[in-house]
Length: 457
Length: 132
Image (spheres, rainbow over the protein chains, first blue to last red):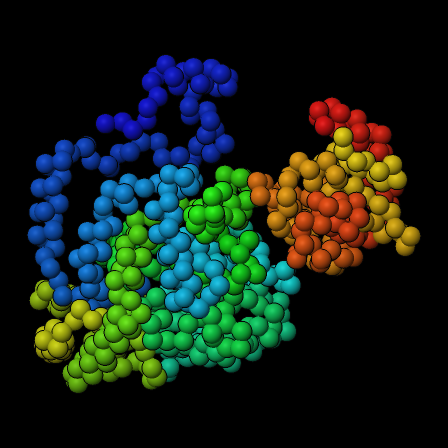
């Protein structure tokens, strides 16, 4: 079924009106070598029955693995009510609520979402969401360049402890807009960014400093010292945070003397299932003084002509449908359905529920680290506090150990040897509230067996 | 009928230019422009010290229905942005030629003489042609 309502005659009439021969001519500014040409490699279409069967066969082949992988996407318990409510027709089919008079439910939900994100991060204003955590980080860097009018360098300091995918997305999205990302090294004993690493930039024009909390290794950065250094050197601060961790940790709005300027993160942990990597959503919150530099939609509360409360998109003059090429961003599609689930998740959990979830995830990870480091040949990579992930070092190459674990139905974590070869046989592990003591014991025993087998080989 | 003071110079993009006693120039948007935009809710002015080229976007005026660039009528260095407008953008609506000025500029050498600015009469013709 085609979803384009125009007939061939309609299309021909429209092309004739604007004096263009073929639809392809509208895209002639794209160099030919960049166009895809054909969709070879994409299989023929399947009908619903066939695709249903294919997918269930693939799901069976994948099996149900016991997962200890985090690294940016986290398995949390999602109350059944979350998606039962999120998939109601009123929410499920909703499009961008430009028409306030027809979209009060969606607008109110986004308004509540913004309020929850603003409170979680202790920031003044939140937008209606971003594409994902990585692109939200890239957008935050672009926003910092617009907002920091004291700086002209467009230089962004990015710790090597920020998720490597976030770093790559930020560079890809912003390098052609004149931004320069400079990597800060981490302390290999502690797995965090030493504030001393900033010393060499003291006399330079830095636009913004990115601070991940917890960082890619699960470790907690010295966020107060890093934030204060940046503000003392006229740089803005971008906090990249895990929303579940915010139930326990100091929110970015309270880091250092002034708090961060922009807080972003991946929203997936809030009620969105892992489902092969997406769709997820990003969140972004800011100081009010920078709100006009913020990308994306913002819903506001107002009064109608009769004095009744209502909700509507606000500050739209920043956006592409009004400001065209000069819009603050051309990534405006908010991840409405995932945001709907997250808002329902947060309202069901409440502040206490979120804190219990975060505490349980932290406790399970401590138990996991304690169990795994009892295995001969396994030790913790870094000293110092972590949230719900940690790096362990093995005395054998990680890849073959992970393969052996997978044969036993266990996803043992993320092999860091491709990301941080300097760490050696490093494995990033995660346990959330979904893991039991029996799960952890099963992992410990399987790891012990796998390492023994690797040594014998 | 728009107010077009005879002692100012203008651009086709609806900025006005006033030469001050010290040789610097004051720049704002015309009465016609503020009226067309409607109630202003936000004005972003440039930082002092910024070098601007003629025709470069250097300020933003945002109303409830649109956001528009303000273009530098001539090249120079920004001497001051009107900081008052951050708190009271509606001043531009109330006094476009007075307290609602946007920026003061130190013109680059020869920039003022070389700028293609309109007289009040010529700007009035632009407005008449636009139906204003």
